Length: 165
Image 1: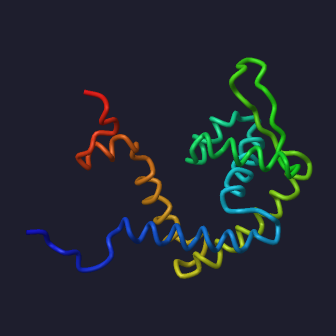
Image 2: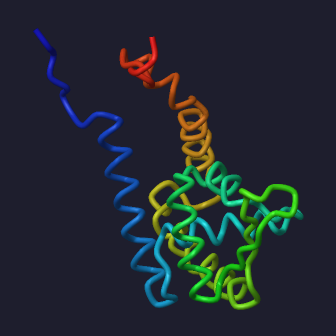
C-alpha cells in the first residue's frame, strides 16, 4: 500500500518554480527580442569570454546544461540576429567556437541588467540576492545539481542505458 504525500513533492515544487522563473524571464526579456534560453546562452558566453575563453558549442552546452543540438540551434538563430559569431575551430574541424559580436555584447549587458533586477524581485521573499537565505538556497540547489544524471537515474531503479547489459 502506497502512502500518499501530504503536500507537493520537492520535484513538483522545483518544476513549478523553474517554470515560473522561465516565464518571468521570457516576459522580462521580450522587449530585447530574447528568450530565456537565448539569454542563458548569451550570458554564459559573456561570462566565459570575460575569463578569456572562446568556448565551443559543446563546452557551452556542458556549462548551461542545455542539449548540444539545442545550443547549436540557438547559436545559429543568434548568429542570424547578429548577436553571436560562429567560427570553425582550427584545431578540431568538428567543433564550432562561439563569440559575442559587438551588438551581442551590448544586448547581453542590457539583458543581464534586466534579469538581475528581476531576480532581485523574485528573491525578495528570501531577503534579496545577497541574503543568507538566498545563499543557503543556492548551496542546496548546487548540491542537487552536482549529482550526475546517470547516478540519479540508476538510483531510481532505471538503468540509464537499458540497451546495455
